[in-house]
Image 1 (cartoon, rainbow, N blue to C red):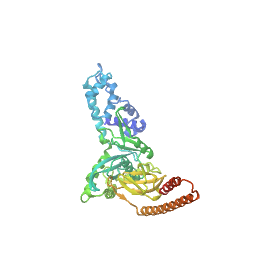
Image 2: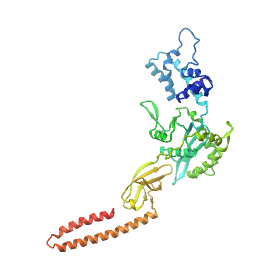
Image 3: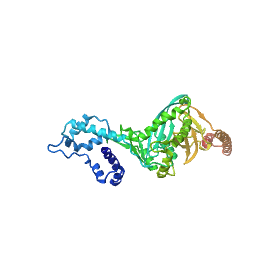
Length: 434
Protein backbone atom coordinates (compact mmCIF):
# COMPACT_ATOMS: atom_id res chain seq x y z
CA UNK A 1 0.00 0.00 0.00
CA UNK A 2 2.96 2.29 0.62
CA UNK A 3 3.83 2.53 -3.07
CA UNK A 4 0.22 3.54 -3.82
CA UNK A 5 0.36 6.30 -1.21
CA UNK A 6 3.63 7.54 -2.67
CA UNK A 7 2.16 7.84 -6.16
CA UNK A 8 -1.02 9.37 -4.74
CA UNK A 9 1.10 11.95 -2.95
CA UNK A 10 2.89 12.75 -6.22
CA UNK A 11 -0.46 13.36 -7.94
CA UNK A 12 -1.75 15.59 -5.16
CA UNK A 13 1.51 17.55 -5.11
CA UNK A 14 1.16 18.20 -8.82
CA UNK A 15 -2.42 19.37 -8.17
CA UNK A 16 -1.02 22.03 -5.78
CA UNK A 17 -2.02 20.53 -2.42
CA UNK A 18 0.20 21.32 0.58
CA UNK A 19 2.14 18.61 2.43
CA UNK A 20 -0.11 19.11 5.47
CA UNK A 21 -3.34 18.54 3.54
CA UNK A 22 -1.84 15.54 1.70
CA UNK A 23 -0.74 14.02 5.02
CA UNK A 24 -4.30 14.37 6.34
CA UNK A 25 -5.80 12.82 3.19
CA UNK A 26 -3.42 9.83 3.18
CA UNK A 27 -3.23 9.35 6.96
CA UNK A 28 0.56 9.79 7.18
CA UNK A 29 2.91 12.38 8.67
CA UNK A 30 4.24 15.47 6.87
CA UNK A 31 7.70 13.92 7.01
CA UNK A 32 6.43 10.86 5.18
CA UNK A 33 4.92 13.10 2.49
CA UNK A 34 8.31 14.81 2.20
CA UNK A 35 9.97 11.39 1.79
CA UNK A 36 7.38 10.42 -0.83
CA UNK A 37 8.14 13.63 -2.70
CA UNK A 38 11.90 12.93 -2.72
CA UNK A 39 11.52 9.15 -3.24
CA UNK A 40 13.43 8.23 -0.09
CA UNK A 41 10.77 6.05 1.56
CA UNK A 42 11.69 2.78 -0.12
CA UNK A 43 15.40 3.43 -0.51
CA UNK A 44 17.54 0.45 0.60
CA UNK A 45 20.38 1.72 2.79
CA UNK A 46 21.31 -1.58 4.41
CA UNK A 47 23.67 -2.81 1.70
CA UNK A 48 27.35 -1.95 1.88
CA UNK A 49 30.30 -2.27 -0.46
CA UNK A 50 30.04 -2.10 -4.22
CA UNK A 51 27.25 0.21 -5.49
CA UNK A 52 24.18 -1.43 -6.97
CA UNK A 53 23.60 -1.25 -10.72
CA UNK A 54 20.47 0.87 -10.18
CA UNK A 55 22.70 3.72 -8.99
CA UNK A 56 23.80 4.12 -12.59
CA UNK A 57 20.15 4.40 -13.65
CA UNK A 58 19.08 6.79 -10.85
CA UNK A 59 20.03 10.02 -12.72
CA UNK A 60 17.67 8.95 -15.52
CA UNK A 61 14.58 8.13 -13.42
CA UNK A 62 12.86 11.40 -14.27
CA UNK A 63 13.38 10.93 -18.02
CA UNK A 64 12.13 7.33 -17.88
CA UNK A 65 9.05 8.27 -15.84
CA UNK A 66 8.21 11.06 -18.26
CA UNK A 67 8.54 8.69 -21.23
CA UNK A 68 6.22 6.16 -19.53
CA UNK A 69 3.64 8.90 -18.94
CA UNK A 70 3.58 9.61 -22.68
CA UNK A 71 3.64 5.98 -23.81
CA UNK A 72 2.92 3.25 -21.26
CA UNK A 73 4.05 0.53 -23.72
CA UNK A 74 7.27 2.11 -24.95
CA UNK A 75 9.97 -0.13 -26.47
CA UNK A 76 12.74 -0.84 -23.92
CA UNK A 77 15.49 -1.23 -26.52
CA UNK A 78 14.70 2.15 -28.11
CA UNK A 79 14.64 3.76 -24.66
CA UNK A 80 17.96 2.07 -23.79
CA UNK A 81 19.58 3.48 -26.94
CA UNK A 82 18.39 7.00 -26.06
CA UNK A 83 19.71 6.73 -22.50
CA UNK A 84 23.12 5.46 -23.66
CA UNK A 85 23.39 8.48 -25.98
CA UNK A 86 22.77 10.64 -22.91
CA UNK A 87 25.47 9.01 -20.80
CA UNK A 88 23.91 5.90 -19.26
CA UNK A 89 26.62 3.23 -18.65
CA UNK A 90 24.55 0.43 -17.12
CA UNK A 91 23.07 -2.68 -18.72
CA UNK A 92 19.69 -3.03 -20.36
CA UNK A 93 18.62 -5.60 -17.75
CA UNK A 94 18.69 -2.89 -15.04
CA UNK A 95 16.47 -0.71 -17.20
CA UNK A 96 14.08 -3.60 -17.87
CA UNK A 97 13.68 -4.27 -14.13
CA UNK A 98 12.96 -0.63 -13.37
CA UNK A 99 10.43 -0.22 -16.20
CA UNK A 100 8.68 -3.48 -15.26
CA UNK A 101 8.25 -2.35 -11.65
CA UNK A 102 7.23 1.13 -12.71
CA UNK A 103 4.57 -0.20 -15.10
CA UNK A 104 3.20 -2.41 -12.37
CA UNK A 105 3.00 0.52 -9.94
CA UNK A 106 1.34 2.81 -12.49
CA UNK A 107 -1.18 0.13 -13.40
CA UNK A 108 -2.11 -0.49 -9.76
CA UNK A 109 -2.36 3.22 -9.14
CA UNK A 110 -4.77 3.63 -12.06
CA UNK A 111 -6.96 0.81 -10.74
CA UNK A 112 -6.87 2.07 -7.15
CA UNK A 113 -9.67 4.60 -6.94
CA UNK A 114 -9.77 7.52 -4.57
CA UNK A 115 -12.90 9.58 -4.06
CA UNK A 116 -13.00 13.08 -5.49
CA UNK A 117 -14.32 15.94 -3.41
CA UNK A 118 -17.81 17.33 -4.13
CA UNK A 119 -17.70 19.57 -7.19
CA UNK A 120 -14.07 18.70 -7.90
CA UNK A 121 -14.31 16.65 -11.09
CA UNK A 122 -16.55 15.59 -13.97
CA UNK A 123 -15.62 13.01 -16.62
CA UNK A 124 -16.63 13.12 -20.29
CA UNK A 125 -16.78 10.40 -22.94
CA UNK A 126 -18.47 9.48 -26.22
CA UNK A 127 -20.19 6.15 -26.90
CA UNK A 128 -21.07 4.66 -30.27
CA UNK A 129 -24.83 4.01 -30.23
CA UNK A 130 -25.43 2.17 -33.51
CA UNK A 131 -27.17 3.80 -36.46
CA UNK A 132 -30.39 5.67 -37.11
CA UNK A 133 -32.52 5.77 -40.27
CA UNK A 134 -32.79 9.37 -41.44
CA UNK A 135 -33.54 10.95 -44.81
CA UNK A 136 -33.56 7.60 -46.57
CA UNK A 137 -30.23 6.33 -45.26
CA UNK A 138 -28.59 4.98 -42.09
CA UNK A 139 -26.18 7.31 -40.30
CA UNK A 140 -24.04 6.77 -37.19
CA UNK A 141 -25.38 7.79 -33.81
CA UNK A 142 -23.43 8.60 -30.65
CA UNK A 143 -24.10 9.23 -26.98
CA UNK A 144 -22.39 12.05 -25.10
CA UNK A 145 -21.94 11.29 -21.40
CA UNK A 146 -20.79 13.59 -18.58
CA UNK A 147 -20.57 12.14 -15.07
CA UNK A 148 -19.89 13.98 -11.81
CA UNK A 149 -17.13 12.28 -9.82
CA UNK A 150 -18.58 12.67 -6.32
CA UNK A 151 -22.34 12.18 -6.69
CA UNK A 152 -22.10 9.88 -9.75
CA UNK A 153 -24.95 11.84 -11.33
CA UNK A 154 -24.82 11.76 -15.16
CA UNK A 155 -26.06 13.60 -18.20
CA UNK A 156 -26.62 11.64 -21.43
CA UNK A 157 -27.45 13.08 -24.85
CA UNK A 158 -27.66 11.28 -28.21
CA UNK A 159 -26.34 12.99 -31.35
CA UNK A 160 -25.38 12.13 -34.92
CA UNK A 161 -22.03 13.94 -34.77
CA UNK A 162 -19.00 14.23 -32.48
CA UNK A 163 -17.67 17.47 -33.99
CA UNK A 164 -16.37 20.14 -31.63
CA UNK A 165 -19.43 22.45 -31.84
CA UNK A 166 -21.63 19.45 -30.96
CA UNK A 167 -19.35 18.60 -28.02
CA UNK A 168 -19.62 22.18 -26.75
CA UNK A 169 -23.42 22.16 -27.15
CA UNK A 170 -23.72 18.89 -25.20
CA UNK A 171 -21.46 20.20 -22.44
CA UNK A 172 -23.54 23.38 -22.16
CA UNK A 173 -26.69 21.23 -21.87
CA UNK A 174 -24.95 19.13 -19.18
CA UNK A 175 -23.98 22.25 -17.20
CA UNK A 176 -27.60 23.42 -17.33
CA UNK A 177 -28.76 19.94 -16.23
CA UNK A 178 -26.48 20.04 -13.17
CA UNK A 179 -26.99 23.74 -12.53
CA UNK A 180 -23.25 24.37 -12.38
CA UNK A 181 -19.75 23.35 -13.49
CA UNK A 182 -17.17 21.07 -11.84
CA UNK A 183 -13.73 22.53 -11.07
CA UNK A 184 -12.04 20.18 -13.55
CA UNK A 185 -13.27 18.04 -16.42
CA UNK A 186 -11.43 14.89 -17.52
CA UNK A 187 -11.27 13.91 -21.21
CA UNK A 188 -9.49 11.18 -23.11
CA UNK A 189 -7.34 12.10 -26.14
CA UNK A 190 -10.31 13.24 -28.26
CA UNK A 191 -8.99 15.62 -30.90
CA UNK A 192 -11.76 18.10 -30.14
CA UNK A 193 -10.23 18.61 -26.67
CA UNK A 194 -6.51 17.85 -27.05
CA UNK A 195 -3.86 18.22 -29.75
CA UNK A 196 -0.45 16.53 -29.92
CA UNK A 197 2.77 18.32 -30.87
CA UNK A 198 5.26 15.97 -32.55
CA UNK A 199 8.02 18.59 -32.31
CA UNK A 200 7.58 19.11 -28.56
CA UNK A 201 6.51 15.50 -27.88
CA UNK A 202 3.61 16.62 -25.70
CA UNK A 203 -0.15 17.13 -25.56
CA UNK A 204 -1.79 20.52 -25.20
CA UNK A 205 -5.36 21.76 -24.89
CA UNK A 206 -7.15 22.58 -28.13
CA UNK A 207 -7.25 26.43 -28.35
CA UNK A 208 -11.03 26.45 -28.83
CA UNK A 209 -11.49 24.10 -25.84
CA UNK A 210 -9.23 26.36 -23.78
CA UNK A 211 -11.44 29.33 -24.67
CA UNK A 212 -14.54 27.29 -23.78
CA UNK A 213 -13.00 26.22 -20.44
CA UNK A 214 -12.06 29.81 -19.58
CA UNK A 215 -15.63 30.94 -20.31
CA UNK A 216 -17.10 28.37 -17.89
CA UNK A 217 -14.25 28.41 -15.36
CA UNK A 218 -13.09 24.79 -15.33
CA UNK A 219 -9.70 23.17 -15.84
CA UNK A 220 -9.43 20.59 -18.68
CA UNK A 221 -7.60 17.40 -17.66
CA UNK A 222 -6.38 14.62 -19.94
CA UNK A 223 -6.68 10.90 -19.27
CA UNK A 224 -3.21 9.39 -19.66
CA UNK A 225 -2.47 7.25 -22.73
CA UNK A 226 -3.18 3.52 -22.21
CA UNK A 227 -4.63 4.28 -18.77
CA UNK A 228 -8.39 4.51 -19.40
CA UNK A 229 -9.23 3.49 -15.83
CA UNK A 230 -8.27 6.95 -14.64
CA UNK A 231 -11.72 7.93 -15.92
CA UNK A 232 -13.36 4.69 -14.82
CA UNK A 233 -16.52 6.36 -13.51
CA UNK A 234 -17.66 7.54 -16.94
CA UNK A 235 -16.45 4.28 -18.52
CA UNK A 236 -18.81 2.40 -16.21
CA UNK A 237 -21.61 4.76 -17.16
CA UNK A 238 -20.95 4.00 -20.83
CA UNK A 239 -21.40 0.29 -20.09
CA UNK A 240 -24.52 1.03 -18.03
CA UNK A 241 -26.16 2.98 -20.87
CA UNK A 242 -25.25 0.24 -23.35
CA UNK A 243 -26.47 -2.68 -21.20
CA UNK A 244 -29.38 -1.08 -19.34
CA UNK A 245 -30.91 1.81 -21.26
CA UNK A 246 -30.55 0.79 -24.91
CA UNK A 247 -32.00 -2.74 -24.42
CA UNK A 248 -35.06 -1.15 -22.76
CA UNK A 249 -36.09 0.56 -26.02
CA UNK A 250 -39.00 -1.15 -27.74
CA UNK A 251 -38.66 -2.13 -31.41
CA UNK A 252 -35.82 -1.49 -33.82
CA UNK A 253 -33.51 1.13 -32.31
CA UNK A 254 -32.55 2.32 -35.80
CA UNK A 255 -36.10 3.56 -36.37
CA UNK A 256 -36.24 5.57 -33.14
CA UNK A 257 -35.57 9.24 -33.85
CA UNK A 258 -32.70 10.83 -31.96
CA UNK A 259 -35.06 13.45 -30.47
CA UNK A 260 -37.30 10.67 -29.10
CA UNK A 261 -34.28 8.79 -27.75
CA UNK A 262 -33.23 11.89 -25.79
CA UNK A 263 -36.71 12.15 -24.27
CA UNK A 264 -36.53 8.50 -23.16
CA UNK A 265 -33.00 8.76 -21.74
CA UNK A 266 -34.01 11.82 -19.70
CA UNK A 267 -36.75 9.80 -17.98
CA UNK A 268 -34.30 6.90 -17.52
CA UNK A 269 -31.74 9.19 -15.85
CA UNK A 270 -34.35 10.34 -13.33
CA UNK A 271 -35.00 6.72 -12.33
CA UNK A 272 -31.28 5.96 -12.06
CA UNK A 273 -30.66 9.06 -9.93
CA UNK A 274 -33.23 7.80 -7.40
CA UNK A 275 -31.60 4.37 -6.96
CA UNK A 276 -29.44 3.76 -3.87
CA UNK A 277 -25.74 3.13 -4.55
CA UNK A 278 -24.82 0.13 -2.37
CA UNK A 279 -21.26 1.37 -1.97
CA UNK A 280 -22.45 4.54 -0.20
CA UNK A 281 -25.95 3.72 1.02
CA UNK A 282 -27.19 6.87 -0.74
CA UNK A 283 -28.76 7.67 -4.09
CA UNK A 284 -27.10 9.85 -6.69
CA UNK A 285 -29.55 12.65 -5.96
CA UNK A 286 -28.85 12.46 -2.22
CA UNK A 287 -25.13 12.78 -2.88
CA UNK A 288 -25.80 15.52 -5.44
CA UNK A 289 -27.50 17.59 -2.72
CA UNK A 290 -24.06 17.82 -1.08
CA UNK A 291 -22.37 18.59 -4.38
CA UNK A 292 -24.59 21.11 -6.16
CA UNK A 293 -23.80 23.97 -3.78
CA UNK A 294 -20.06 23.79 -4.53
CA UNK A 295 -20.39 23.59 -8.32
CA UNK A 296 -19.18 26.72 -10.08
CA UNK A 297 -21.90 29.12 -11.17
CA UNK A 298 -22.91 29.34 -14.82
CA UNK A 299 -21.99 32.56 -16.68
CA UNK A 300 -24.78 34.89 -17.76
CA UNK A 301 -24.12 34.31 -21.47
CA UNK A 302 -23.53 30.95 -23.14
CA UNK A 303 -20.38 30.27 -25.12
CA UNK A 304 -20.86 30.89 -28.86
CA UNK A 305 -20.18 27.45 -30.30
CA UNK A 306 -22.12 27.94 -33.55
CA UNK A 307 -20.12 28.20 -36.79
CA UNK A 308 -20.31 31.51 -38.72
CA UNK A 309 -21.52 31.25 -42.33
CA UNK A 310 -21.74 34.28 -44.71
CA UNK A 311 -25.02 34.39 -46.67
CA UNK A 312 -26.11 36.52 -49.65
CA UNK A 313 -29.77 37.23 -50.42
CA UNK A 314 -30.63 37.04 -54.11
CA UNK A 315 -32.98 39.42 -55.96
CA UNK A 316 -35.70 36.78 -55.47
CA UNK A 317 -35.22 37.10 -51.69
CA UNK A 318 -33.61 33.67 -51.17
CA UNK A 319 -30.43 32.34 -49.60
CA UNK A 320 -28.68 29.12 -50.62
CA UNK A 321 -27.02 26.70 -48.18
CA UNK A 322 -25.83 23.16 -48.98
CA UNK A 323 -27.70 23.28 -52.35
CA UNK A 324 -31.02 24.09 -50.61
CA UNK A 325 -32.79 27.46 -50.92
CA UNK A 326 -34.73 29.34 -48.23
CA UNK A 327 -36.75 32.57 -48.42
CA UNK A 328 -36.12 35.57 -46.16
CA UNK A 329 -38.15 38.81 -45.76
CA UNK A 330 -38.13 41.03 -48.84
CA UNK A 331 -36.42 43.88 -46.95
CA UNK A 332 -33.12 41.94 -47.13
CA UNK A 333 -32.99 41.40 -50.90
CA UNK A 334 -29.47 41.99 -52.20
CA UNK A 335 -27.97 42.20 -48.69
CA UNK A 336 -25.15 40.25 -46.99
CA UNK A 337 -26.41 38.34 -43.92
CA UNK A 338 -24.64 36.42 -41.15
CA UNK A 339 -25.49 32.76 -40.57
CA UNK A 340 -24.71 30.79 -37.39
CA UNK A 341 -24.72 27.02 -37.97
CA UNK A 342 -25.74 24.80 -35.04
CA UNK A 343 -24.60 21.26 -35.85
CA UNK A 344 -26.21 19.92 -32.69
CA UNK A 345 -29.75 20.92 -33.67
CA UNK A 346 -29.19 21.16 -37.45
CA UNK A 347 -30.37 24.78 -37.50
CA UNK A 348 -29.13 27.98 -39.14
CA UNK A 349 -29.68 31.25 -37.30
CA UNK A 350 -29.83 34.20 -39.72
CA UNK A 351 -28.81 37.65 -38.44
CA UNK A 352 -28.40 41.14 -39.87
CA UNK A 353 -26.38 43.79 -38.03
CA UNK A 354 -26.56 41.75 -34.83
CA UNK A 355 -30.33 41.18 -34.91
CA UNK A 356 -31.79 37.70 -35.43
CA UNK A 357 -34.09 37.51 -38.46
CA UNK A 358 -35.09 33.88 -38.10
CA UNK A 359 -33.87 30.35 -37.28
CA UNK A 360 -34.08 27.81 -40.10
CA UNK A 361 -34.35 24.04 -39.69
CA UNK A 362 -31.96 22.79 -42.34
CA UNK A 363 -32.84 20.33 -45.08
CA UNK A 364 -30.44 17.44 -45.83
CA UNK A 365 -27.31 18.58 -47.65
CA UNK A 366 -27.53 17.99 -51.40
CA UNK A 367 -31.33 17.65 -51.46
CA UNK A 368 -31.79 20.68 -53.77
CA UNK A 369 -35.02 21.58 -51.97
CA UNK A 370 -36.75 24.97 -51.84
CA UNK A 371 -38.34 26.18 -48.58
CA UNK A 372 -40.79 29.06 -49.01
CA UNK A 373 -42.32 30.98 -46.13
CA UNK A 374 -45.89 32.09 -47.07
CA UNK A 375 -45.38 35.54 -45.52
CA UNK A 376 -42.12 35.99 -47.41
CA UNK A 377 -43.81 34.86 -50.61
CA UNK A 378 -46.59 37.45 -50.20
CA UNK A 379 -44.07 40.21 -49.40
CA UNK A 380 -41.97 39.36 -52.44
CA UNK A 381 -45.08 39.34 -54.66
CA UNK A 382 -46.15 42.72 -53.35
CA UNK A 383 -42.63 44.11 -53.73
CA UNK A 384 -42.50 42.77 -57.30
CA UNK A 385 -45.83 44.37 -58.21
CA UNK A 386 -44.81 47.69 -56.64
CA UNK A 387 -41.56 47.52 -58.56
CA UNK A 388 -43.38 46.93 -61.84
CA UNK A 389 -45.69 49.90 -61.18
CA UNK A 390 -42.79 52.16 -60.23
CA UNK A 391 -40.84 50.99 -63.26
CA UNK A 392 -43.76 51.86 -65.55
CA UNK A 393 -44.19 55.33 -63.99
CA UNK A 394 -40.49 56.09 -64.38
CA UNK A 395 -40.58 54.89 -67.99
CA UNK A 396 -43.48 57.19 -68.81
CA UNK A 397 -41.86 60.17 -67.04
CA UNK A 398 -38.62 59.71 -68.96
CA UNK A 399 -40.51 59.37 -72.25
CA UNK A 400 -42.43 62.58 -71.51
CA UNK A 401 -39.23 64.49 -70.68
CA UNK A 402 -37.63 63.16 -73.84
CA UNK A 403 -40.51 64.30 -76.07
CA UNK A 404 -40.61 67.74 -74.41
CA UNK A 405 -36.86 68.24 -74.95
CA UNK A 406 -37.17 67.34 -78.63
CA UNK A 407 -39.96 69.81 -79.15
CA UNK A 408 -38.08 72.65 -77.39
CA UNK A 409 -34.86 72.21 -79.40
CA UNK A 410 -35.71 71.14 -82.91
CA UNK A 411 -32.20 71.91 -84.24
CA UNK A 412 -30.38 69.47 -82.00
CA UNK A 413 -29.39 66.06 -83.19
CA UNK A 414 -32.14 63.58 -81.97
CA UNK A 415 -29.55 60.86 -81.40
CA UNK A 416 -28.06 62.96 -78.58
CA UNK A 417 -31.38 62.90 -76.72
CA UNK A 418 -31.81 59.19 -77.37
CA UNK A 419 -28.42 58.50 -75.74
CA UNK A 420 -29.02 60.90 -72.82
CA UNK A 421 -32.41 59.54 -71.83
CA UNK A 422 -31.39 55.96 -72.46
CA UNK A 423 -28.68 56.30 -69.74
CA UNK A 424 -31.10 58.05 -67.38
CA UNK A 425 -33.65 55.29 -67.90
CA UNK A 426 -31.12 52.58 -67.13
CA UNK A 427 -30.05 54.29 -63.88
CA UNK A 428 -33.66 54.72 -62.76
CA UNK A 429 -34.53 51.10 -63.54
CA UNK A 430 -31.50 49.89 -61.63
CA UNK A 431 -32.72 51.91 -58.62
CA UNK A 432 -36.11 50.20 -58.83
CA UNK A 433 -34.48 46.77 -58.91
CA UNK A 434 -32.65 47.54 -55.69
